[in-house]
Length: 213
Image 1 (cartoon, rainbow, N blue to C red):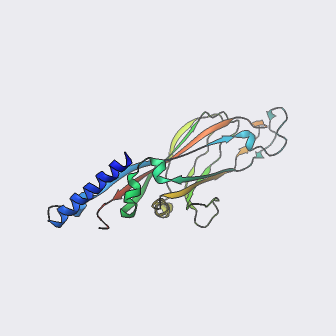
Image 2: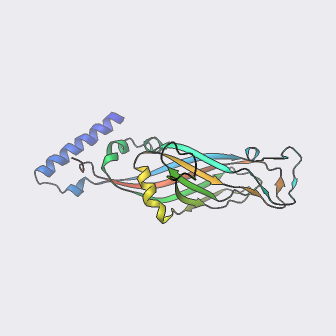
Image 3: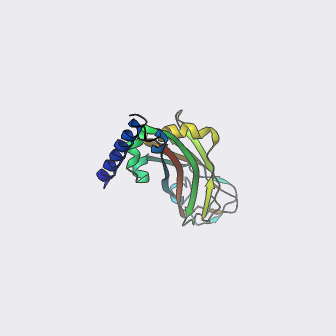
């Protein structure tokens, strides 16, 4: 199937080149737009965040208790993440890559504490920290109340769109996330439960297969 798609793209390119050479077509006719979604999924488990005195019976906390940081580091291949093999073929012929929106979905949430704000970053491969100089703070995902499922959209930061798009154009990158959960006064301690999180980075790619010919 992959070879058939690549062959079809090569055939289309040949036809377009012939048409341009003969003056039949405008080069803009060859422009192609792809709408893609990049999913990033992970889970949060309360037992992995509790750092001290976590074996006793559950009781209302008399004070705020800071838990261990939630840290996310997921290496991604843009082609594998989207399932669109054509992206590898047109990677060098991209005219633009735009982040259109970021969806945030929390399901099966029975955590007894609020999920904190999560900073979502993207970075080149092998970067594992949001503090790295090449890490780009893409958006901040909102607080999610304990035992609550949500589906919402977070805007990309204006100043992050261009550098993040440049990272995506290389096809391989890392998604990073960080946040510090806190047990509020009166919430159960030790904490319990888990939740499934999914972040979907929606992008629009514009390419022209004959640009580099």
